[in-house]
Image (cartoon, rainbow, N blue to C red):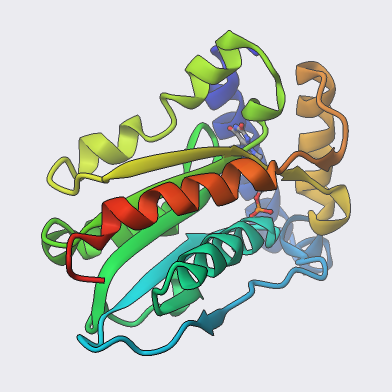
Length: 230
Ligand SMILES: Cc1cc2nc3c(=O)[nH]c(=O)nc-3n(C[C@H](O)[C@H](O)[C@H](O)COP(=O)(O)O)c2cc1C
C-alpha cells in the first residue's frame, strides 16, 4: 500500500463533497443520493450481564459507516459479560453521557487512515472523565486484511492523530482488527471510489474479521479494565 493513501482518500472525499455541492447548486438535487444514499445499514445496540454490587457498567461505544464494527463491539461486550461484567454496547452517536460507567471501550472503523471523526470527537468531548476511567480502544480496517509486516506497521499508526489530540486519555490496551469490505452497504459514490482503491490495494470484497482474535483481546482487556471499578 502506498503512503499516498490518506491524501488520496482526502482528495476523493473532497470530490464527493464538491460533486454534492455542485449538484445542489445547479439545481440537480436528484443527484445527491449518489453520494449520500445509505444502503440497508444497521448500527446494533445491546445490553448484557447482570447489575453488579457497585452498579458500575462497561460501555462499548463504536463508530461505523456500514455496521460491521458494531458487530465487533457486540462480540467484545459478550465476552466481557461472560466474564461477569455488565455491558452496554452503543453506537457512539447515541451515547448521551458517561455517568454510571466504570470503564469504557471505544472503537471505530478506519477512514482515511484514522478513526472516524465521531469517535475522535467523542474522546475529545469526554477527555476529562475518560482520563480518570480505565479505557481501551479498538479499530477495524482493511489494511490488516493484507498479511504483511508493512501493512501491520501502517495499522500501528492509525491512532496517532487521536493520541496527538487527546494525550491525557491513555488506553490500557488497543485492539487492531481486519474488517469488512461489503460494496452492497456503500452508496454509489463510495462504492465507486472504494472499488478503485481496493483494486489498487489488491483487496477483494469479503469479511476479514478474525473472531478468535477479537474475543481473545476482549478476554485480555477484561482483567486490565477491572481495576476494581467495573
Ligand atoms: C470511506 C472509507 C474509507 C476507508 N479508509 C480506509 C483506510 O484509510 N484504511 C483502511 O485500512 N481501511 C479503510 N476503510 C475500510 C474500513 O475501515 C473497513 O471496511 C471497516 O471494516 C468498515 O467498518 P464498518 O462496516 O463498521 O463501516 C475505509 C472504508 C471506507 C468506506
